[in-house]
Length: 156
Length: 366
Image (tube, chains in turn yellow, green):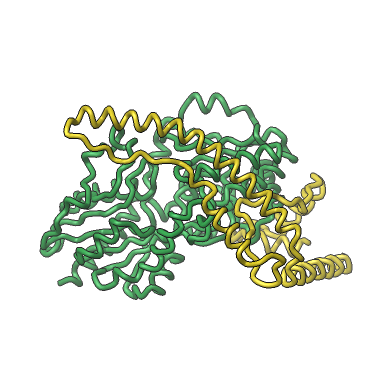
């Protein structure tokens, strides 16, 4: 793992021992008990599967459309024309006031849309068979990690 | 000064407070005038905040009212397709194209499809200014490679002009008093946007707070156009139990920005797309150790200083930040290297480069 971290951490200053920094990071990771395998939510929804998808392409297309439209609910104040400048300013101020309150509701609606879509996309993703290419890559990474740890063990 | 070119006007799309392009355009306008050129800033929409602030609306000239004259040279700041860029192309006037890079549209596909389309079009239309361009300038070698790929063989690099006022201005005392309590403060400065990956910084904070539960993360930057991303970040913070440690400030004034830099113990960036990296320069100038993901123009801006990570492993980044917090000798060494690197971006150095490049281009014009 030391070599892995040395390759990951880039310190170009020759006055700093990069390998030593990597060693201390590794030591502290263990001491603090940080679990690197936590799965965090992602902002972008995973919606498309090119091959081997369980559902017909139309469903992914609609999901994509819904994802793009889910936040587009705010309203913008349009330019206000009037022959009298004072009246135009007054009308614009009124429009802005209305837009302010409407957009508060719109933001709430966008959050609800987002939450529903995340649930839906999550369910679809769970039901999909695992992507074979990704599966193979994960397997390869796991094997390489195991091999590296074995080699490090021998060195010690 | 050339006899042929008497005026160099800059064209910027959105004049907005805190926007790096607006800031640069302003500083450059002063320099161009000092070098003897007439110079105005021609803009599209101007943010309402500027109309009453330090940069009144009246000081920008709408491009629609501009008619090119014989001795004029336009300097187009380009970062996306816009009606303004279309108008400059239609005019066909001699041009210096200043390429700030175009964020890959995929980052905005779900957040703001309209903006994503502008970005996609912006990249596709980059070659369309070639016929009128005297000189194409990129802000980094990373961006210059894109210019060359778009057919701008005669291109050069000039870094973004980063004014030095942050080190001179008095930091907001209320903020200093509120957060200078000994807890570790991590900082990232930049518009809230999916390409800047503020969500990955939350993951770093998640691990850092397992090492030091009182640690904070300041995400300083405008929320404009990213409301849904901000909402999602706040939800994510709640989900991870980080609400107490996350401080989303929105757009801040200069005195507040100076305070956040003063309060921070390290600057951390997980951004995946930067055409340059102004906050990295500011952090280096202000003596803040930097840990950053090595993407786009970030390694070039850092120039071998700071600590870069080639892969996003949030727990490792958290440990690196902790090491910088606890090992004074390591921190000092990193900060010293960074200060040396920051000198490459001193305004007088950058302006000299600007002048040299502009004069060479004008000379070629004959």
